[in-house]
Length: 274
Length: 255
Image (cartoon, rainbow over all chains, first blue to last red; front, top):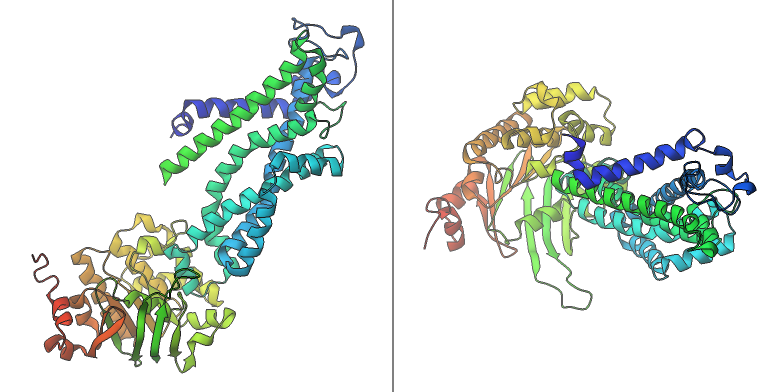
């Protein structure tokens, strides 16, 4: 079956967008027109140039090429988005599996802990965490992941509650298969698909939250390029020098949208297969 | 070999609500070695609850279960897992009870791995399939590629993997069409004779079980209404309910 048929036209387009951003991020030194400026070298003589043939997206207050900055920013944004989701899955999935499969006190204990985390507004908790840990990419990832893992724990638990009563899981139990084996061999593979779809859907919002932290000065620090922090830096010059804030803003918008639509498309294929 | 005394299963409803009706109310039964006991009843009669309680899938409210002289209800964790190796279970719908993700070889190897059996898994799986009338080519297939009868044969082969002394069958033919039902029943009959298995056969269809059982137990609303040797129950049913059950199928659509 062709890709377009499986994901639909919007899904395929968004997959292309994600792939283009990912390639740009990975190959930044080769595709950025001014790689040195992308990393942060100032170029004062050319500051606040509007978009032109030489600087496609204009230059910032230090004269650095916006396109190169946005391309280097993709590195940070993509890795933070993906890592936030990965770390959240890594914590939430085992917690949800254990709580759902064993039930009883394990379930009560774990779920009340997730309730505590879910009782706070996620962004507020992330801001508090980031402020306490200090700025930096790793701290930013930790802060957001801490507020996110309970969602995955809940989702994994709900999946397990359905799966553990499936006759084939029951059959494994009746054959005397040990609980860890049942979890790894029967329940985990079946739960991975819906969780994977949710993870793909969540990379967009994760990246948005990370950008928000950077915008507030709690994420990645200059001179490293980061979209949220670039929007913040461009804000005082808006709207006269609109390209400064708009270029990274549009990049955030495009990538977050692409991940969401892609996740939706994946979910639809899952439903069709089932 | 299996002895059940005054078994009561009562499902808890809510925390504060009154305790529900007993799904199984004080049922006793004895299954001697090599015998087959048929448990018959309409849906809702408690036969499945009884079976699930015997298999330790639902909590027992009171009563005792002894398996090979061992107090089966007191077993926990690893010792329960070991005791379960001695019971083979065949469920109603093979497509639900066989994992959709594994090949037949993997499905048959699973009990051997669980029991730590030191044999060639593939060879043993192939001989089990042969015993259940399937060629070894099926080892590489998945359950969804099989017909209902073939899949149920695989489920029976899996139940026999660890050479259990007790085979528990929960409506093993209800999901199959009539001609296949007869084949599966014949297979079970052969296995019973060849392996000297004790069998617990639960069904709503009295005719299916009459073929294969040595004795019968008729259940209604959680209680045993009639029990005894198959011939006696079939030829001279004392209760109207049993007669009604026998009538099913003969003229299925009655006004």
